[in-house]
Length: 387
Image (cartoon, rainbow, N blue to C red):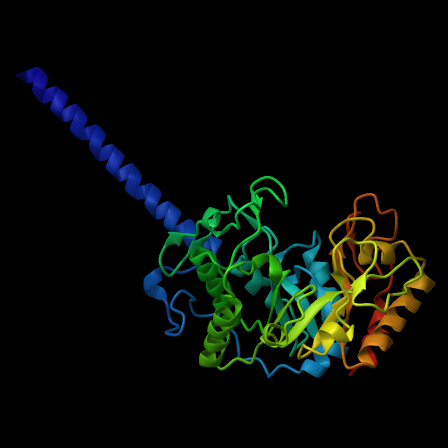
């Protein structure tokens, strides 16, 4: 009998230890939920009735309305500025603060990485240049093993459920192309765009939207409607764009305030005139061609990059300083004279074996005068002409 009592007591103690350990782990994970999404307060400390998960001090002042004209003439590709993507992010913020940029394209970068809004808020607090428009890029690449939580529901997003069939590992191990047909993905999009709007982000660009759109039904109209409705509720003026490739349907293209794409320069900095760039396979769309531009509200263009030697930015970085200046001036004049935008490069990815000028690391371009390219003054002079 005594043995049974001791056994019962032992197992009872083990059970209590397991229960307390589980509770402690749950509390720990719940705190991680908050940290992962940039929250530093418990749920009952919420002070913003419009978005209860954002504690006091995180929401920002309402920004002015967006000027599409200034986006076209003073747009800058500032990839990952608000995502700590640059290895020297403090210097990146300083570079932008002294620039003539108005629109910061892809400032929040989500390629294979869900946005960390604590970092977004931290970098925004370093920005002394006022009344800029910040952009979020909604990438066509997700990490299926990402750890990311909806703080409103305390539920982890299931990135596996977001994948398009047949796209597993397309961008590397544990990656896929997301599919608008997935409710999990649509919920994720609305979650991150709503949080970005609360922090004053005003431009949202869907990366290669033809990879994200469903093959059976167009979900973009509903997604866009929901994002615009939330922005209107918050009293924040926003614009929404997409990389639309060779889509020509005017009804679809005019869902967006702008369409965006690369220019496809050659070694001389020249571009082709037809609707598709030759030598790329399929139709690498040249959006300034009337086949696309006549069916869109606005067109924004930039030096394209994917970290390969034949992309725009890599070709540009291999030019000498004089050729880089002439190329940017020519492209800027060509497109702004047609009421289109050409965004100047402030940060982007280069091929590791590019062998051209570079920024803080071999694989990154930056115009900062402290690095090898030293294009900063020239680029700011071009932007000054667009004021």
